[in-house]
Length: 137
Image (cartoon, rainbow, N blue to C red; front, side):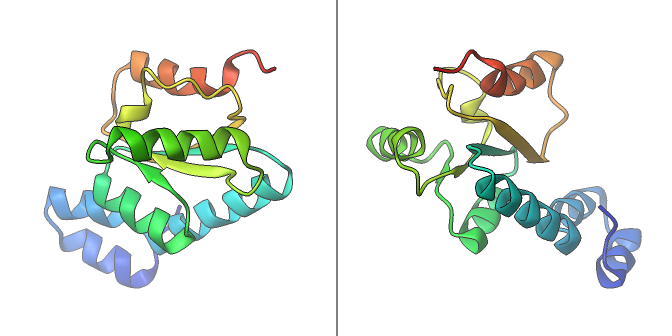
């Protein structure tokens, strides 16, 4: 997604760490993510939004009022979020860090959006794609 003028001006002079934050938190990227989520929820899809950046995960999930799972989320809360995603029609989107790459079974998921990545291995990408390519039903 293109950056706003202000973000791009900051990006041009930022160090590498700050550049990463800016492209993840780019307002245009946020608006695109929001539009994709709204569109797919209207279509009845179940959406997993992956973010390898925990601060970005928190910010996107908070602004969009959606549940999230990351490493510090306890097992009880994690299971509750997953159960609501699986069984409740009012929870159609969850935000997950790389903890969702393995050991989480979500055959209900039909759409994946990835807002940030540490450019992981092909195995990681395959794991994420596997969340929506599993047989349904």
